[in-house]
Image 1: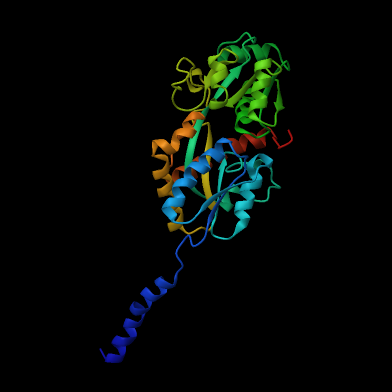
Image 2 (image 1 turned 180 degrees about the vertical axis):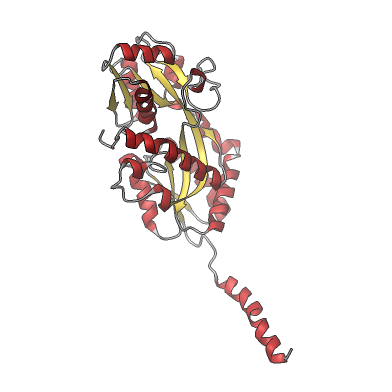
Length: 323
């Protein structure tokens, strides 16, 4: 081989280190985590718990930006449209999974515009009734609703929310006539249940545990794959012959689609480290959540499962945001 040929072959090897050195480090400026819910909400608590660790791990300020509205969709869309390489999102099921199915006019599609980073936390749903309703099991609730068509009202935090879909699917499966009553917030819906102005609801466990323990509401079923330690005598929905093993309230960490895979992997690893620290997860546990901090694949699979399960329910029952 001639000296000229050897020199030509060596050029790429010599150029590679200089090209790598030219790539800017990430992050090279503050990182923003947009949360589509107000300060003090559980998604906000999760985002701030992770942000504290990420700030130290990444060597840049990590700022939580609360942009509440439209059930969390406003915050997710803002993150998707940011296009600056330094904006992320923390959100829940709905705006992070099935929102475009529920509302085809939504300005983003969770399935194509978001890149999962980590499932931060989850909790099961509790199907509960006002204690004046003469039912103590799911079978008794179904029988009572069938005997009193149109007489029972069930609450949720909005059409298409998981709590709404869980009860709507139950009613459709058994041919029950019940009226959906949406509320602006979880506390408002729980207050109405305790007061007896609605008869039942499926609520994220943390929002009704205190009321269930005090006898203000009666828990008759729990979603998920194992009984809750806080409500050990309340059977799972699956133990009562109904689906629900994979139904959870959850909080997820996302980046805009197209974010480099190595960046996603780094964020997921640091998030896992953050939530494996008992101090970091304590606030989430106090709110009733199970801190997780999974790899990206686990959150991606959860989103796929929700779309596969709830998408047909939404279409079959023609559920829309205003319904």
